[in-house]
Every structure is written in structure tokens, then in C-alpha cells.
Length: 303
Image 1 (cartoon, rainbow, N blue to C red):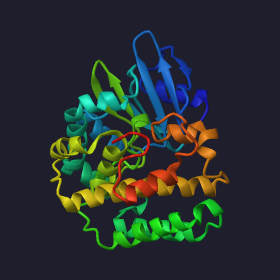
Image 2 (tube, helix red, strand yellow; image 1 turned 135 degrees about the horizontal axis):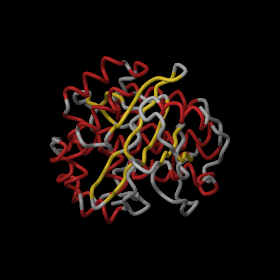
Image 3 (spheres, rainbow, N blue to C red; image 1 turned 180 degrees about the vertical axis):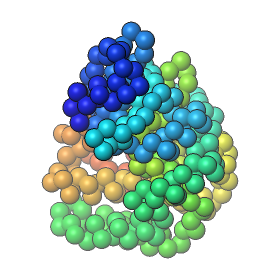
Image 4 (tube, helix red, strand yellow; image 1 turned 180 degrees about the horizontal axis):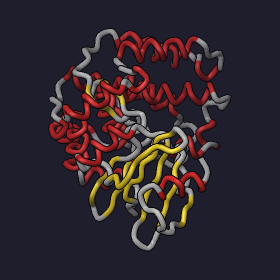
């Protein structure tokens, strides 16, 4: 969609209002715009799942939706633009109640669950078993030496075997990419953004990467309690498994894009996708994966 299409969409609700329109800063992969007039500032996105986003806004998880519609056969919506910043680990550590409460609202909302289930969302219902099967197939197709070391393969075998031992909880609405690049802080208030790929899955699919990446384990129980999750040994196993899952998935994605294990240091946009600046190239996602499989702290300092 062009800038003219964005103007045409806005004209459906604000005819005659003059908007300046520009692309947002780096990191946005979707087709979206920032529109400003004398009266309002808006975030405008195309090809988005309007129904769940409207419910998330009603819950106060995302900014308020001010308009939505269809243009040339594509959905669009406008949300209030909020000027803020992504939180860092220190901020999250001081606001674990907000973090857990917001995710708890999402996971526990029956209306949102029904919306996601009714819309199908590509038929995705990821479970530990189905995700393990997909990762096993992706890994089997790779011949890169850095993905076929003895240490990686033994860690992968342990990780894949462990999936069969996990007991999936109820399927609830989950984010798919729970990281700080999809969060916004304004006036000490946290917002959760970018729910375009919302799916029904075990709540630990959100909680595992979120907690393992950003918070020390001694704070996990407090966040999980706010999410409505009991932090027992079975839960702990699932948290580490889902943290390992996302790290292995990103490592495989790098290979599939033709980048080496250390490509992360050269491709800052990939690293921004998990909410971190490009770091030490010797600490790639395979190092994260192996640490999570072993039940160890995040090697990048998250816990």
C-alpha cells in the first residue's frame, strides 16, 4: 500500500482532515504508517486481524483503536499513537506486576480466546509436540557445519525428546513474539504491541522466552502469579523448553536466510526482532538455545 492508500483509508473516518504521513522508525516489518494532524496522531496498519486487536484495546493491553475498515480489499485500522520507548531489563524488573497482569489479561480473556478460535488464524494451534516436529524437520534439512556440531545435535536431541514429556496447558491467546521490541512504555505505563500473529497456545509459550530472556528466576513466580500460572517444577520445565524453542527457531531462520551463525552481529534488524542490540558474535542464538536446554541462565545476562 502507498502513502495515498493510507490517506484514502484515513479519509473514510476523517474526511477533509489534513494528515502528514510517514513510515515509523526502523524495526517495523508490517505495512504501517504514522499519521499526524492538528487534532490527532495515529498508527495506521494494513492487513491486520481487526477483531482481536479491538478486543486487546478494550482490555487496555494495546492503545485505543480509533477507526478501522477495508480499502481495495484489505483491512486497515488506526490506533492512537503513543510516544514512548521500549523497556529495558531494569524497567521490567521494577514493574513485574504490570508485565504479569497484562499478559494475564490476554491469557485469561474468554472473549479474546473465542475471537481467535473463530477466526482460525491460519489454523495454527501450536503445541510442544507440533512445534518440536516442525523444528525437527527444519533442522534435518540443514547441512551447515555450525548447526551440526556434536554439542548442538546432542542439545537438539534432548530438546526434541523432552517435548514428548511436556503436558500442554489450556490453549490461550498468545503473542508469538514476546519481546521488548513489541512493548512500549509511556509515563511508566506498559503497552504490548504487534499482535498480528496472535495464536492459541500454552501460556508458557509467552512466559518462557519473556522470563528467561529478561528477568532473574527469583522474579518468575511473581510474574507467573499475575498471569494466573502456578510456578511448579512442571511449569519450570516448560518455561525453559519454550525459551529454547524460540532461540533454535531464530538460529534456523538465520540458516534458511543464508546467514551464518554469526550473521546476527551483521544483521542488527534480526537482533532487534528479539529486543536486543547486536552483541558479542560469540553469543549467538545457538548459545542461548544450549543454555536454555540445560536449564541455565541466559548467557546474555537476562537471568
